[in-house]
Length: 141
Length: 227
Image 1: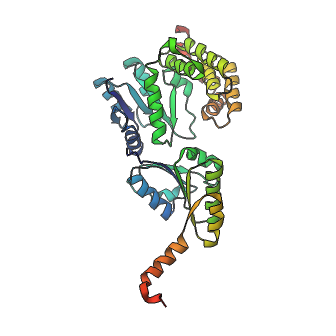
Image 2: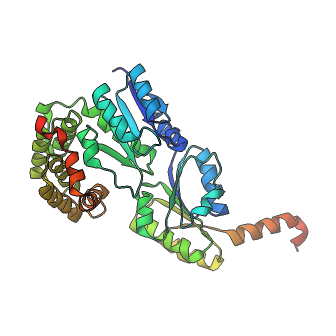
Image 3: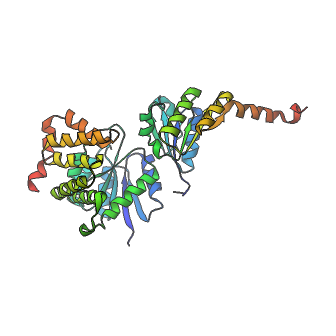
């Protein structure tokens, strides 16, 4: 295994979570995916070689079951800002995960994440910027 | 030092792959087997120092592999892979010389650390045993060699040196259960659980002792009188 291989916990196995888990697993990382609904695991590809845990990621017990305290990185990718914030907070504060990245929809919430030392990816801003990028120079005054 | 060889036995392709990848940076020869039958076949044909063994497999399961190895190749060291939430019979496994467990999911580092520890246990010398950790490692070595009274002696020494570790009390509980002393076994499991409620082996042992009919617990003690 490559020296750069990391132990990564992904909370939420929707389209985004599954996409990340598939990609990271194929890149040789050791990946654990947590989702409260086992049907979500159908999004994982055949090439996914990590672990699946059916549990509520907002519960500390579920994160411990995933051995999140040993993780190098945790990604909170559910569709709900509140859930992601809760997961990120527990991972960072209680379990001491060195790097936590959370998906966030409401750009105004990014500030509260930063206070926790949690990195964010705001789907709204990312999508908005992509739209604007497509428009190219048309929007320039 | 000659290259040690490891056999990874799991019916899940993902787990075999993850384990083989995790062991890659170590100076080891790694082989895999998809089930108990194949594992025993490989053991008959080649020499292995260590086996990473899943207990839950269709057909010949992990416990049956352990039983067969006891006769066939008792010197092979075992690391048992367990799934979260299963209450495996750790005492039954211990009776067969398996004392190291790793629970899914595992990080590559966790696997490498455990494999190194198990392999380096072979190089321990009784005269060099020191401290809590030394006695625990020696006790585990004794269990692997089915020398249970010596194991118990060293676990007690370890507890004398540090009485705050759940692992030691759990190990003592298992050794007591192995020789039929269920009531004291349960007390030690309880101490382990009180010291660390997140230490799963202790809660699993407690749960098993309180749910299994007593007669089943007794069956596991056949070898006791021969010790």
